[in-house]
Structures are given as structure tokens and as C-alpha cells.
Length: 209
Image (cartoon, rainbow, N blue to C red):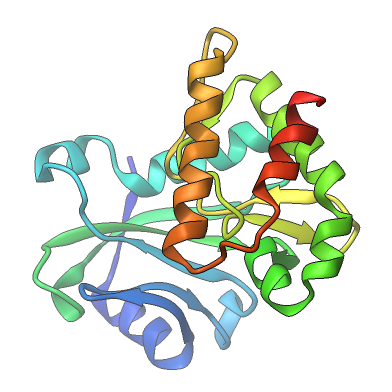
């Protein structure tokens, strides 16, 4: 069972922290900059499913489980240190929401890197193709696989963030699922105006062509 955190505690986190990501429903990711949680991120999961399913299968618990699964498979991911419920009336009208505290990965997203230094990103394509292939070989199907959710870490490795929409399959991934993963990546590039990203070369490197 996940514990309940008081609304006052969450209010203090929001007051003292820095909002990194939000949408129309409110803040989603907050960097905590005060108290014993300094250096941790607070991630709030707004309800995207039926409220009953959200209660029975809390998003914060699934996020923590997926992050731990990746860690056990040797794939860098955020380290969740706590998962809990809180009264979301302080930020929205969604009732109780699940949330977690986690240690972020030290690195830069490939999307930010591509916008800042496309030539450097080009030099990383071979390693990126190998990383994506490794994920698939480990039977990981990450529906939200795109360059905003892949980080280049300070030690030169790649890691994954925002891992809620992830599944460790029992059987190897077929070509259909792999191609669907790349289609999602292409759609992300189109939506965010990154048509110059060398996706064709990345696909050729992935398939060994």
C-alpha cells in the first residue's frame, strides 16, 4: 500500500521547488530545492485512465516498477525513492492523485542536444541505434520511445526517462512492434518540428543496412 502525503507537504514542495513541466491540469514535474528532498524530482501523475483503474493501478507505482525493471536489466533510468497519494484539490479538481519522488538521471535529452548541437548528435547515431536495439532485445516495449525521453548521460551512456508507458514483454518483440516504435519516434519529430533529424540513417543503422 502506498502512503498518504499531506496536502501541506505537497504545497511546501510546490512553493519551494521549480516547476519543470506542466500541462493544463497543473504541474507535472518539480525539482525540489529545499529541505531533505533537495536534489529530488517530484512527479505528479494526472489521471489519464478511468478513476477506478487509476486507484487500483496507481501510475506512480507502475512508474517505480518500470524504473526498477530497467535498472535490473542494466538500462539507466530514474531511481524512485518514494511513491504516495495526495489530495490534489490544492492544484486541480482531480481528487486524489499518485506521485513519486525520484533521483533524476544526470544528462541531457537527445532532443535538447539535437537543437543545440546537431553535428554532435549525428556522431552519436551508431551508439543510439545500438542502444535502441539493446532495449528491444531485452524485450522492452516503450510506447513513448522518442528523443525527448532518451538521455545522453555524463558518462557517455544512454538512459531512459518518463518510463510510465513501458512494458517488459514475455516474448521477443516482433518486427511489427519494433516498426511501431519507430513510427512513434517519427511522429514525435514531425510534431516538434525536427524534420532535419537523421531518422533514415538511424533506421538503417538499427537494421544493419
